[in-house]
Length: 308
Image 1 (cartoon, helix red, strand yellow):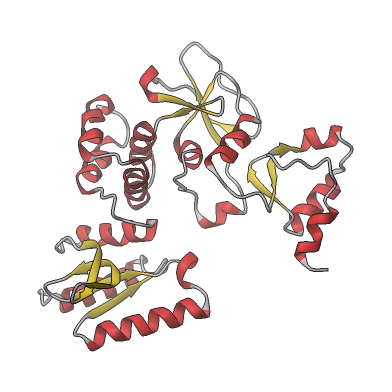
Image 2 (cartoon, rainbow, N blue to C red; image 1 turned 90 degrees about the vertical axis):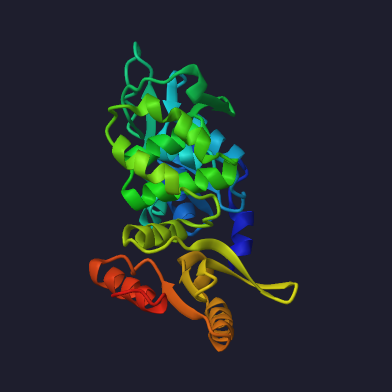
């Protein structure tokens, strides 16, 4: 049976909007049958305890509706779950399969939620820190980005700041204006270090990680998303470039560089660059172990004609 024909076998009571298992149980769907739909790829888990027919496209509205099914009315969605609802994914690749709990917090004076699919506690939030999406209270893009800048690992925190700047047009000045509120908060020293180097031109977490590694090594800042031109025609856009030195650092992520066609396109593109005097350094998710990191950073120093 091909996958497309499987859609016709889904029971009509299975909605095209997010749903929970208890909702489907009331409609007569057994747990085993739901698990079978998940295993066959006809239904996907979008949050802990929340499901969606796989043919329904992802959107911010769909994510908000999913969250509304499991978030208490007096809770505020924060941190990585808020980022997910706002369209900035900060989950690790493995977490797309084993979903983490929803991060929800309540304001002072309320009892934290004890729902098994939720995690969190109490948090001091001003009215301006909260927005509402499809009836769900969520921290604003600025607040969410800054919270993650404190809580996440250094490289993931920068990726979150970059992602929110790119998606919502947030400026460094807007981030800096909020920093005094984070005085003495855990992680604020990291946040203060990252805000000045956050850049909306980064187009993926991997590019953010790579740029941070370069800067942490004391190397000159590369230019993100640099266009190589032939005459007046734009030919290739480079992840991180040193145009005067003709050096490029490219991050190959799983999503856009994993198929044979993509790899062949990358090979031809990089051969074209090398033939025109560019040094090309390629990194991927495995390039951040101590040994791998030292190797490609030294390669970059040599390409830039800096002391190794």
